[in-house]
Length: 321
Image 1 (cartoon, rainbow, N blue to C red):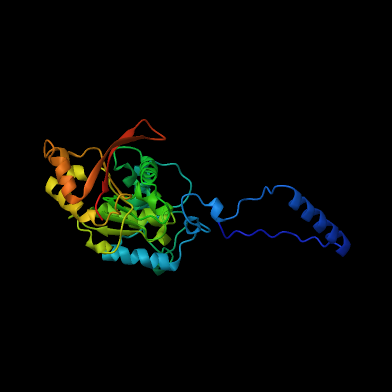
Image 2 (cartoon, rainbow, N blue to C red):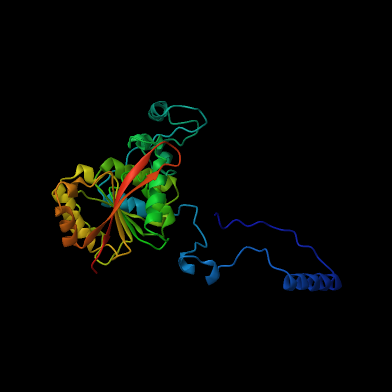
């Protein structure tokens, strides 16, 4: 919902007697019939949460503070700015053609000389502008929304919940969590530099989500201390990430994550398979999980809204405080 848009309405000047009559009629009507006005934000209208969970206003425009924040995050992750060449105008092209145009031309209208550096707050590489990274997943980018809806509903998330994604990539799923959650409530650990570049330099700015301040950090050793010692997550998930890790590292990561997951109500979800556990053989998987204070909740699947696809997820919860 867009806020902050005001419409000027002409004011009708009524005589005192006519105004009084209208007021009397309206008062009588309201007192004798049910109101069809939009519901107020009373406690009876808030389902599954408090009034603080209800969004009263969403910010639309990016501020200078937003730009400085993401610049600092880019620098802190060891990323480097690239020269930007931008073409404007309506001209249907493939991504490869768009990229070639971006490299060859500056566009129909552009600034020259030193002025060229003063009008683009966050210059973005051409490869990101043509969204080549949307094809990095082997399936449509739109599938990210499917994953978000499944995980959010399975975990009973609210806007004030806290979420950690292990390997958020270019934010195919993460964008939806960032948009839904309160500012700073989405965390991610990602090792790939190109994915981080796409997330921080294109996806967050272009989606108008810089003000949500997600904490996205570079790392590949399942070390979560950078996110702080006091944080407690309602949901921790990893989509296909554990498939590419040594079992020993997966178990080390789970051991570190247990203390960061809310007991009983918090959820860990892992996609595709749990071979890191089944490879232990027999009952050893359950024993290993129990030793960490985790309980296996079973396997679930969800369908895609837009294409013929389903995904498998394995759920866990924390048993001990």
